[in-house]
Length: 454
Image (tube, rainbow, N blue to C red; front, side, top):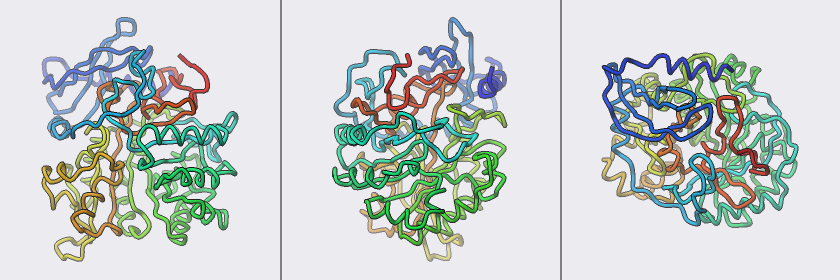
């Protein structure tokens, strides 16, 4: 049994006695061993912690901790937005999570679509859901063109596109990849990067921007070197800071993407928030992503964090700027999957930090009425505020994304996923399906689905 499996069974062994349970709702979960769909019960224990339990006929019972506070969990669920169905679906010919593409069972359209341009990486991070190694069999330019067409077919050219990997900057033709996307009419193309090449290669970021790059999605896990020793295998904080400075020099916005690992950097969420606010001229967003079991990530330090844990920890560390209920569902997917808030810059003495949560100045009804199903995750609040005439250029989007693995997979949430990975054969696969591995680390979907794994 590998370390990632042990953590999940620690969670299972921590479940309370049935006598203290309060049933919340039913759903469908997976067996981590065989990935079969199983009827599941979600319940709260006497302490208010939320669990999901199911029993596999072959591999036995499993209970997974899914949220730290039942009242908060139920409040988020109650604020689900109407669902916009995807277009151009394929027949549902296999049980979830197999046969994705996007299948006819799917209930929400994609708003953020990824293209994996390489498996190559110039780091070997212990915390890597991709387990990226080398660039063998990377997609050709024709295949990348096909994946752009998948996105246009799935959501149109108004959808946001993120180029990812591996490490996209390992491809020498990355500027051409960006240029082709802009030529096809996509308004927003973002590169998901570790920042090493951007920080070190003179003129490189300028070349990407000249080709049409509109944003940098920078992995940025903390503000001390020991965090990067844990997540990246070595201290590269200076490189990360230089990458941010390069974005500032070139005049392109970046979003800081944080893999939150219990016991490693979950105590730095407040510091990361303050750092982002202090640099909001170049940092447009802070994306907090609890690490999940996939790829190389072994999660051996502690029980896995949920988005609920991150929401409460962020509020606790924010020096009063945020409360847990300032962070609202983003509407594009299941309310437990994507939450966030926009922090508006203010000169009002009432806000000593210089910012206030937009959710303090609107009702949930106003939010729902102003919501556009075409807004990507990071633009929901910006689009609403811009319509109201609120200046948003120097504010900060904070997003918490709750990725699922074989232990936490809730099939209902999966069917509402709005973050898709595109593959050359014409399919757009939900992110959590595409990266899903079983308890032995075997993937359900091969990269770019160039081979059939199951």
